[in-house]
Length: 219
Image (cartoon, rainbow, N blue to C red; front, side):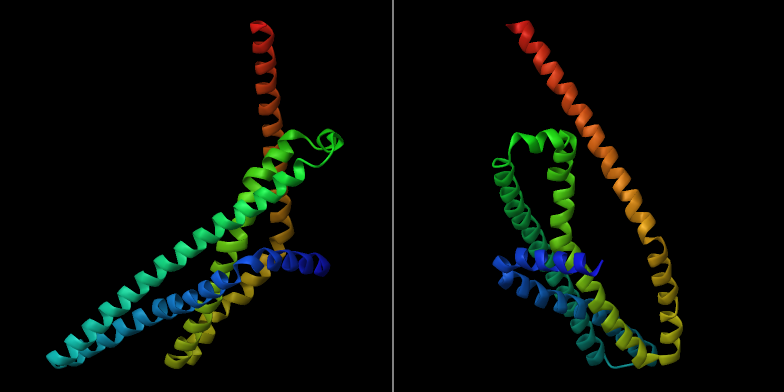
């Protein structure tokens, strides 16, 4: 649904607006992290090829230090990216949860009559965490994967263009399979969420009954 996608993108951009500088830094850190992750094995290849050809001690020391620097850079930006994604997750979850609870305090009692308590609990816990994870880690992991595919494809084409085309050919089949089973997957996810909502409602009713019975016994 194109209209639904546009609404989702607009909502996502609205959540990003207060954190635009952190988003920009995270996007930049992700580029550096991806560059190090792709360059590290290539640098290792150069070192191994040099050893096999027979090289000087100066070449080995220079490339070994370069390889160590690549590893340190990869580890550094990996930690930086994970740290910033975590902070984004927590910040978005806090902001969205605060707005939702504020909204729930203003709705009338009819809202709670129409919607089962388990459904409300499920949406305010698991689904909210999934949504905030997607808004931060999910989107930036997708961005990182796209960058990695772009960088790796460029390196592979520089080494062996024909082999690269053979390696990329299965992506067409993977995309077809994903489109074929997407609706079925969404249907199963919906069923799981409805079952979780029913379980939450049953648990809430059980605890409410236990509390009411205990209160009557005490009184």
